[in-house]
Picture 1: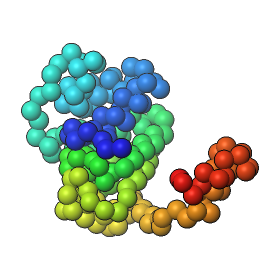
Picture 2 (picture 1 turned 60 degrees about the horizontal axis):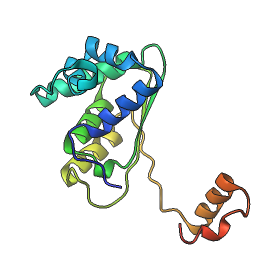
Picture 3 (picture 1 turned 90 degrees about the vertical axis):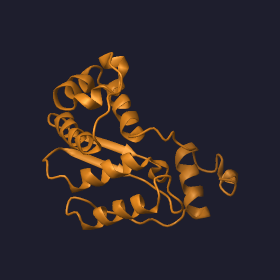
Picture 4 (picture 1 turned 135 degrees about the vertical axis):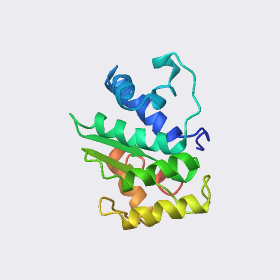
Length: 168
């Protein structure tokens, strides 16, 4: 499924999901640490989206995620980064390079192939991820028929839907 190309969509989506689990916590932290991010959510701020320089957005995102993870560990799972917009990929690269201490773990997944943000953004993310002492990259191969069959058995019960593994 292809994600919308709205700037910072992967982070906006993650913040909304976090607010669903902890109502009110995200808007309070954004108001205190990332006002330009709060403005991205009219449902919380009542404001429109102001024009803000990208570097400020990146800095505020780092501060907001550090604040959100101050009391509790925070794990953000950002899937299908190959479909993310360039701003999101750049923000993720900046987060990987950030020196702000936090209890934050970001897990990003992506597939080989063309990136919506372009090859340059893809290469930047890979190079920052490889060079940053706070990052780790795991290159995984494609799933085999045996992997899929084991997953289907584990998820739905042994031999329950095993015949579907080749189709999956």
